[in-house]
Amino acid sequence: DVKVTQSSRYLVKRTGEKVFLECVQDMDHENMFWYRQDPGLGLRLIYFSYDVKMKEKGDIPEGYSVSREKKERFSLILESASTNQTSMYLCASKTGANTEAFFGQGTRLTVV
Amino acid sequence: AQSVTQPDIHITVSEGASLELRCNYSYGATPYLFWYVQSPGQGLQLLLKYFSGDTLVQGIKGFEAEFKRSQSSFNLRKPSVHWSDAAEYFCAVGELYGNKLVFGAGTILRVKS
Image (tube, rainbow over all chains, first blue to last red; front, top):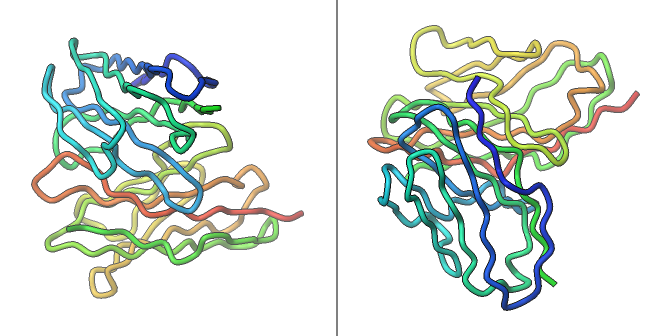
């Protein structure tokens, strides 16, 4: 089975802190994604990566950056956390076009 | 750009009753369609997918979905709902010429006993 693992289930950070969310997949997938999930808004794409060191902005990239130094790992970085970034963050991976995505269990981030 | 609409934010059904969750998409070609389920505090799990062929697709946990091109719909159904089906359900479409999935806003299913 494909496994996508997010490093933390719950995080509490202070405003202004630099925050790292880590995601690892074990199926050699080329594509990895970071989504943000808020009630009533569904999943909104923050960034995705289609290869090592390659990235593309999604729909809501402001305030975020990403890093993909190895194929299996995709990190989301909040450069200076703000309270409006309190949310559920979901990582996903998939192979090529028109295949399903596999999701991690999510990280619930609270910024105080 | 593709979009997915799930018209119902919340649905409540009685245990044992049938269920239909609606999904409409906008797309310029044959779509690749998915239904995912999210239990509270968890990630998303794939229920079923449609790529081509038979328009009635069977999935896990007794769910099925029917693709109707004329209505741009991909509704999810289950003949008899169990209390454990209470969750949030997301419909998604695969991006044309790309690798991304576009998700609907989700439908929260409540099951009453």
